[in-house]
Image (cartoon, rainbow, N blue to C red; front, side):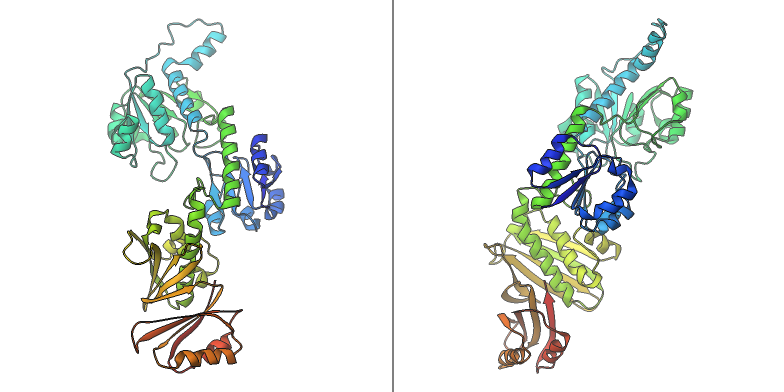
Length: 527
């Protein structure tokens, strides 16, 4: 039974989800704050469920000998060292949609509070001042709202804003024209948005391309009297530039739920009366907290029990419906890669993976990752399905994939070709109805061989008597043959013998096989 540690506060219902899915769970909600204790115990767990308090550092990951998955109840994973997790083959998941409505509603709330100066008016009234004329607000009806980021949360904000009769424009490089029409927004470039928007709200992740996207230069291009809302990430706005723009009146007001440094306790923006501040409350509703807790428990349980991958940040997602269909193909892809990798003796320049027929209609990304892992593992060792694609990229190994409809006799198959400094080596395989993977082609030579844990690969010249001599030699060497599979390019041409054997074969035995007349190569291949 898989075992999961919950090191931050999650609802009792989430803990029960683990139990209902036959996952042993230790609920220790204060453990995440004690990094030394977490380091001591993490090695016994297959899964880790966290919020923001637990810091999953490289040191913690180094001690996580059995850890397979980290699930973050929420969106942000700043507290998880994803590269270190990837290197160890640990899936990192989040729950990006559980708090989307809550965050979008908070952005709308801040926009309305900004438009009507509600926090300042509340404080004034409580101070027994009746400053009715001081707090002159603006309507949002018929105003233009500029979205920077039109993903899940941004599209919900757009929907709510349209309900308030606002005109919504959006800047998002990944927003397609069709999607823009579907969510009822006008797609524009950033300069156009800045020039036209009465209100600007940010809903984008913090990456190099978005860091300080609202800076002094952007603010100079903005409409006079613009109001800015940020419920996404601190660092999207240059806070010093915003301070100056608020002081000068270029920006009429700002409502901020996130800051460059959090907890934010001594931020100069706090001094300004035209700024509304909240302490990162975007996801802080009882509904959102419950939703993300339940989702992360379900996602971790599904991965540990069936291999279903949802909302992973370092591996392609695999749905519950896909998992049983994909699993034998993923296994085949890794075995094809491993076969080619074990036979490769020089530096790899490229990997080509072709999917034909029924398999081409499936989610090929997990198969690609598995194939790359298979190719690299024999030479690198410390590599896994999660880390393999990044390692290949870092080493300058090109990865090419193609998909096509069925053209040959097999309903579906995968062909993998490895290009090295000296040659190309190709191998193809399929999955039969019983779920067992089989080789169907090696080096362009057709054959039919079940893939078994221990195999002997021999290439030779096609000569009479060779197979008999090889069988006799193997018998003399004490190697028991389980299956004998043959193929050749042409009469008298290159021939291949692919044998399933019992146990392992030693280096000394391989040397004897290589001495056999006509043998060009003899290799033990293990799966």
